[in-house]
Image 1 (cartoon, rainbow, N blue to C red):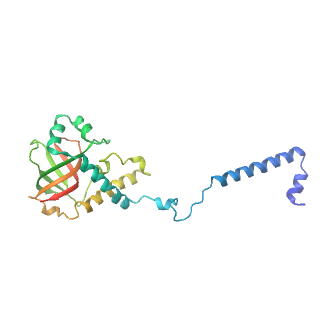
Image 2 (cartoon, rainbow, N blue to C red; image 1 turned 45 degrees about the horizontal axis):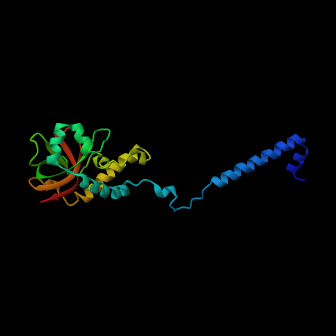
Image 3 (spheres, rainbow, N blue to C red; image 1 turned 120 degrees about the horizontal axis):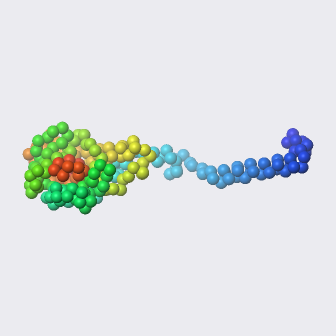
Length: 218
């Protein structure tokens, strides 16, 4: 007779019932754990290591979608500028995508590139109210999250934390630099005519800082 059997035999009837109930409970718990356990094979689609956020991959995937959306919705600057000056709030609601720091608006224009300061070139666009100044980010540094926020489809809740959310914006900017500005020498743009489609955050209706999704140099 085993030690466990000797011990069970030595217990009163009520004690034996308690022991049996305890063993049954353990069996039920172990069975439930087994049923709830999912075997994940290394390298499979369920391997979380395969799903780690890659900012480089994210930028490559998302920028073409953003560019296509912006080009589809872009408003000519000659139409957008008077509307923004007349009623900033209404223009933002009509043409833009809301963010916590102001709406991001899609715009298109043609003009002559002016003086370069830092990573930015001013662009003189005919047909605009004289008080409206358009500047364009031409790199190499591209700042801000206007591209990330331009469509309204990329939200914080899609990411693990704030760092990933910021990295997503940087990755999209970096992909834009490769796809749009990769063949453009920003130091040689002054005096040239460009046709641009891009986005800007409507904070000051008289001063636009445009991040391009498409640039054609003539």
